[in-house]
Amino acid sequence: MNDFNEIEKFLDSGIKESLSVKTRDDFSDKVMLEIKMIQEFERQDKKQANFSTL
Amino acid sequence: MTEVKPEILERIRKGETALFREIVDTYRNMALSLTMKILKNREEAEDALQESFIKLFRALVSNGFESRAKFSTYFYTIVYNTAVDYYRKYYSRAFNVTSIEVHEAYYNDGDELTRDFEPMIDRSVYGEDSLSTEKNLDIAEVQRIIRGYINTIPQQYSVILNMFFINELSHEEISTILKLPLGTVKNRIFRAKEKLKEILFREFNKEELIEYIKV
Image (cartoon, rainbow over all chains, first blue to last red; front, side):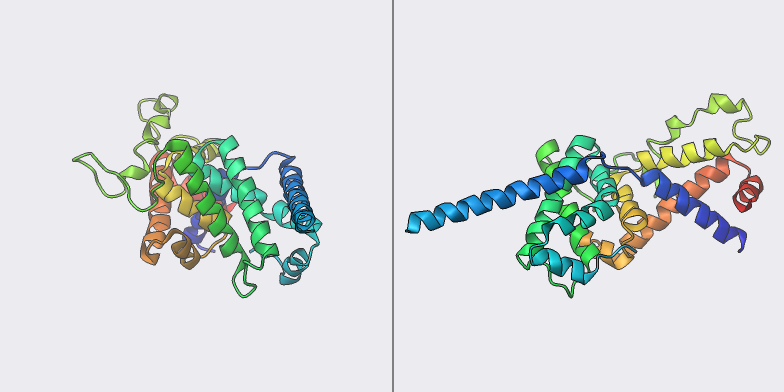
């Protein structure tokens, strides 16, 4: 590999490293919990709607 | 390139909600990196990202996502637009990735890339000859300079760099998401890298740097 490519590769990996950040550990748990709650509310709403039409 | 398998998307659509966690785990760090570039605040960036995932989930279960489309482009469009909405709410002004405001009469093309960065280099460390070819190469310092540069370049550049290097989107995909001409996208990535090269070669001996890289 020539010098030009070596430098490009080095810069690319340095840029990548500098741009990277990480979410907090419990991030996925929070998203999944939020989705569960949304689904539960929607279920309740449907139930309510069905009950009202009876 | 990380792409979610269509069968996973189909199973989520059919009700296997728990599988959505795979998507969240795969994309959360890469996507946070993008919302952080826009919002510059971890709390806001994580909130915007959480909302993006919920929008994505809703789109998947309501058939809003067409399986012919590329998942990552679709997802990052949601992430970008959500973060921009948050930016508007948070800063009470529009997020503008199109133009770079330049006020100085002595402005030269590309100056905005280092305007805020230059003062971060502590020249006193290098002595009067500053950053000369005699300086011993300190790779931690090289990395610090790269990090400092990336953290201070305008968002008009950092958002595009992030989409390219972290989100692994193509020039064309970035151009579509940001509604910017393809040439502008390519040019900003090129200029950002050229400026970084220029800074490093000004600070360090080129041959020494190349030798280090080769090891």
